[in-house]
Amino acid sequence: MDYDSYPSCSLDARRQAQAGRDNIYLPDQAVIRKIIRENSLVNTYELTLVDELANHRFSFEPGQFMMISMPHLGEAPISFSSSPDSKDGFSLTIRNSGRLTAAVQKLRPGDIIGVRGPYGRSFPTDRLKGKNLLFIAGGIGLAPLRPLIEQRLAQPDETGSLTLFYGSRTPEDFCFNRDFSRWRQDGLDLRLTVDQAAEEWNGPVGLVTGLLDGFPINDGTMALVCGPGIMIRFVLEQLQAMGMEAENIITTLERHMKCGVGICGHCHMEEKLVCIDGPVFTAAEIPDPENP
Image (cartoon, rainbow, N blue to C red):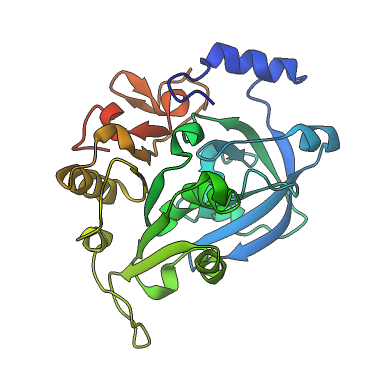
């Protein structure tokens, strides 16, 4: 995908119409194949579209999102958390944070939810090839970075060094800890930190920004950042203070959305709309660095 351009909502509507859909607001049905409990508030749902033809045609890029829905509970945008190269459907990692997501957490394998998408601008994978990549995540912010990590690990000939700094509130709050050993074996330099240490925790305690101290930044390094807004703000500031160009720092932003296709305006960020201009942005594209 060309990082400097993303289809307008009218083009997105035409794309879906060409796929056989006249109403871009009508969700597909997806069946839950498996539920993985990440922590007390977060589950990962492995999904497959009920329509076999639609499922066969379905694809997404790292950084994009789906709109999920249940009857009478509205919709919410959720980032993909599985590899885009998977042939077994897709995964969405969902935190219990409201009526809809609380209802989703009561579902079981075999149940159906509504999904629309994929939407949004993806990570600039062409720009990332051959670069040393520094991933920085907080909490569930690892979810939208996970597809890119999986993709880069699967293409070592097109990838420089891979480093992940990941922070959570406690050791029990890490997501995707089942992946950590495999990622390390595949060449990812994974460094973890927590805000509050448990008795068995032997790693660093403190903010994820503390892991940046002394990390080498050069022209071949790009950073990918996702987490709570306050974390993103301080990480972006620290990376630029360390000499990294704003164009080489890429983040994903969250906003409340109603349509996902650039019509309702609920996700506006000054003159930009997160649903179609993002959710992936460079630090240089964020209008207000004080409010990422």
